[in-house]
Image (cartoon, rainbow, N blue to C red; front, side, top):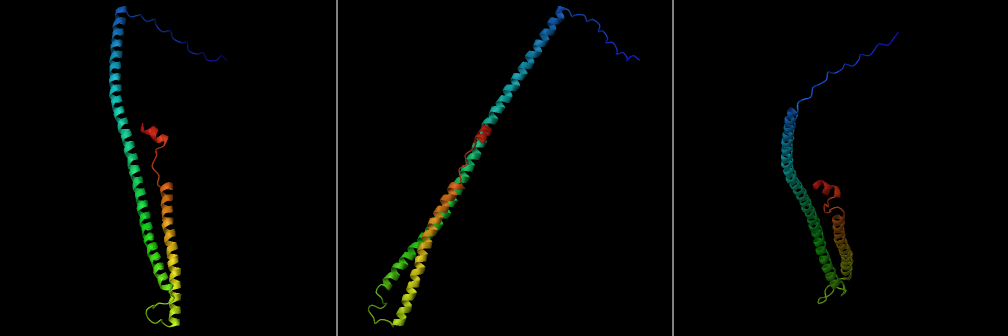
Length: 181
């Protein structure tokens, strides 16, 4: 069997060409349409460019305002840490001074070897109890001095650690700066 035959393509009828006058009016109409489209496009571009430029100024202003707020917040964190540290350091310095005065007074009592210099001395067993109590006070006041110094220095060290490690200025990355343009 023969394969089915394909339909033959139809021939198009020949078109007549428009006269030269018609071509000239079409050309002028197309030029007018092109000019109008160009004018509208330029107007829209300049209108949109104005909005774009205004938005870019606002965009950067928003970025810098947010960055300034983050810097102010960081400064508040730093001030809070410094105030808390100063509270601890000043309190420990006060304890240190009081303990040093107590040690000075106990030394003035302990050095003569007896309590009543202008009166008859108390019995020996009472003086022994007094000197044991004064020695215990020396021990606790020495511990107070050491702990007050340690707490004061530890608070300063902790403040330095927090200020240098945890509370940093918000420095924008290059990506953030590129988005802000």
